[in-house]
Image 1: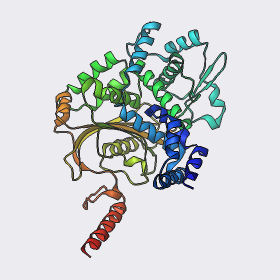
Image 2: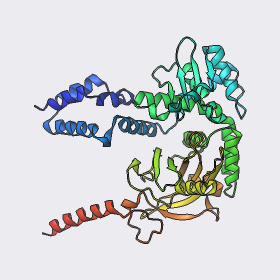
Image 3: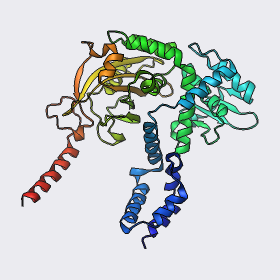
Image 4: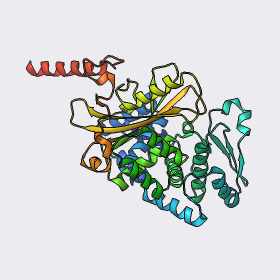
Length: 419
């Protein structure tokens, strides 16, 4: 009877979602071990299966959670991809002085891999207007790009296609949309291609030099940060991702979080769509729960600022940046977080912010000279409204329901102990 959950596990697609090989676990040995498991462990397996069948643990969320942890285990830095990008540049004699031109890079796809480029055909299909690009695979692959994309977005996609070919990656999605990435291998290979692409666009030598200048300033300068993003013809997300990748290896900033939030015009709802946490205990993103993210964070501020400034108008390329010195409620942990928000180029009703928050320690004080700029706001923050006990918070948008449940349970346990 205790083997029943094991049979269900094999019949389900959970083992396909779990990237066991990437964690050095042999699938056959894993199944053999489970077959000899106790009744208690079998019950645990049955519970996991039931959870996986529920909406709380869909294949998409399961794979994305496993992938996020995989990046964190590797410090979000991959030397082999860095070296692959450098070897590609040398082999193809690419001039990486910023900004790169997507048409120049596409010539390599055309000459080496027989690619064609089509920047108009997607416009004929209303259903595809939210997709950034599609690759029609074959003897002569055709890369269809959305005509509304910025040059930075086109450059990023072309860089990813170069990565797939240069690194001989076959397990991939042919649709350039995060919505079409479900399995762990698809997520990992998409990440490798994206990492490779940003390493080309924001080459390590120039990027390191410019960030050193940025970090070396005595005052926070929003316009200087935005000018650096524009210098490389990158999106704010590409820029922050590159900084996150190199932070530990180059600057010794080993504790940070990266967050991406979306919001719609005319709403006060903010959705966490991407997160990475490196060597920190806090959970500033709420683990993509349905709870209300702390409104004191800079991620929300910059989104509100750009929505208010544009006020229904369309301003492609317009960015708003901000910074905050935060301290987590009832802890001694402090962060310097900067964030950039902009309008979605494919849907002007959507606004996105990306935030990079570095743990405030002695290493940060050595590297980021403007950390104590008196113009930087200081705030006590928390994770979500539902888990927060700050009683006089003016920014609160939801009652601390989760906290009250925990407190009620604790009170019952204490009463039982007294009894």
